[in-house]
Length: 406
Ligand SMILES: *Cc1c(COP(=O)(O)O)cnc(C)c1O
Ligand SMILES: [Zn+2]
Image (cartoon, rainbow, N blue to C red):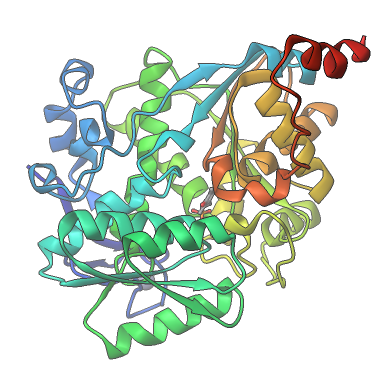
């Protein structure tokens, strides 16, 4: 049973039938999926969700596709772990890490993609594509392979090598001269030329819905309570916007009591258009030329930047940006304190949490959840060290090397 009824313009509320479409023909506003929430409320329950699969498909009532036909590699329902050691270092109280590195292709992008590829098949689409900063490419190629669809994934030529290599094994990688914003512009043009489903262009309304499941899981894993404050990495701003929508929907369908979650955003200084607008108190997200090791967040002209800003302000959160050194330090901090190795996007998130703790924008009385969205093995170059010098395979050899440290 699918409870999605139509697409609705985020600006003027005109509705459209469910089709591969992404902007309003009247005002060019972005389209979102609209559900029959009364029907969802009647169908959904905590008990029903608990009996569902250990994947994001346990929340099928709030997704815009037929779950029984899902292209499923097992995305979602990743661990939410209490991070007391990290909290102690940062001078915070209750901190939780949502470890979304443990998805099928090791980033949160498997969530939107499992939904988008399932919808592409419903629409009779034979070829899927995407404009990606790296992780989306991985996820699209994998889910397309799983579904037996053809795929083209477009990436900036200078992303991390491991992301290109892994994706090339799964599908067809097109490396483009230019940055993400150039790649995205090309993909928008290609939607006019080819009958493709480009997951983050003409399938974007369905694609973005997958990210709401991070909010659903957070609530369920906290025993159906909402956190006080969440920190979310921001690239296009879709993830942050949809986490906000997810918390609102839980209240709307009666799964949690009305509660206020402060939503904060994290960016790298080398690509901080949304953080800059926030600091300036402006509504105008001015495009930047990205230059940062956090390549998966390197979107200089974010499609949902304005809406992310709006959600952050509405909820009483903040958006901060951190330096390259802070990102690398934060990767090491999370690894050492919690045993979780993240790519730079996670470093951005942890470093932003640290900065907000220093500035008093997050406090030790709050229950905080941070989203760690990509695995460290995808970007080893930023933490590369010299190879360890081999010791002789003898006890004396070990002592000679390690006892001198004392
Ligand atoms: C894409 C991505 C994000 C941010 O996603 P948006 O929805 O574009 O804001 C965060 N973290 C990682 C690792 C990503 O790949
Ligand atoms: Zn409109």
